Image 1 (tube, helix red, strand yellow):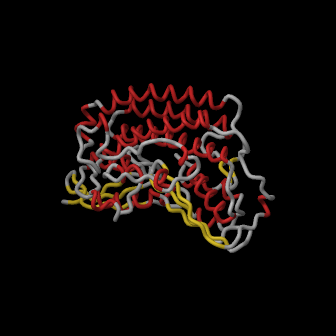
Image 2 (cartoon, rainbow, N blue to C red):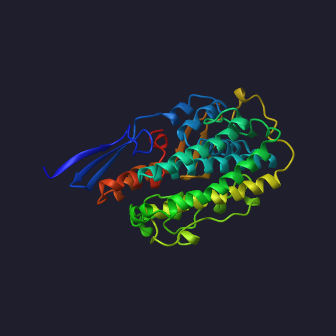
Image 3 (cartoon, one colour):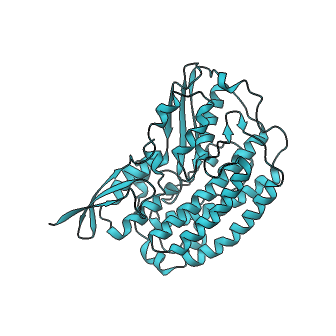
Length: 375
């Protein structure tokens, strides 16, 4: 028998969550790949049409578990656009703080998973442990570690607790010191040098056509980041760079771009930029209200119309198209998640010709969120 079938997932250490990739293999070379989502949460968009505008905030974080806050932000921005609301400056800064904390946590999760797929389990243990400090901050701020239900249309649920910014600064100092350890064990490691360059390449001339966004697109050489191109929240007031190929600094030594190595480096550099952004937020945090004075949320009637709001998540462009017929519930909600293109079209294309040993690291290098696929 020349060809045989191989299944990675849905319960497998080499898959990015509850997700399955069906492979047809000739020897140790993949000749065909099919993505099979459908092992986790389903029907979010239809469920949102059966809940009030306010109730949906508690539902939507589950569309992307490692980084739930982007759902809250994009949904809130779309509703605010329909309601013609301008939220207070303090609320904008708090939202930006939450999104950048979530970005760091998600990137730590992604780096650890990618390292684990290469057998570097020490990095996985370190990143999960360091991510817990971010979760501790979220617990102090929102009362929850994973699903925060904190960003609401009109602002945020409540103000920053006393001493929170001091604790955030302390965690940022710690994480900045930890980056040196990650560099030494991961980016100066012979295993990474031999296993990641030239693997899982997304051609630059195909990236836009394939719907690639976020770090995966920037690794191909496009300086595309919604925080800069279509700024929202407090991002217009903040100074930061967009890590992209070939501007990789000290890490530009191995790759021609668009591969697993470059995607790994981009996420490492984005952690550094997020630390910089959060320090600016700590210094610039304005006083004032953290939310608008709103009517009874259970009786909201959002004006008829539609709005699209988007944010830059750790995985790429995350958008919500919200349609209102003037009632107490959305008429239609559609989520534009980055994992849909990365986790189906891109995976099935770039896995052809890959070695079996590289399949898991290619999946982790794309940083897919399975609930976004099957929402």
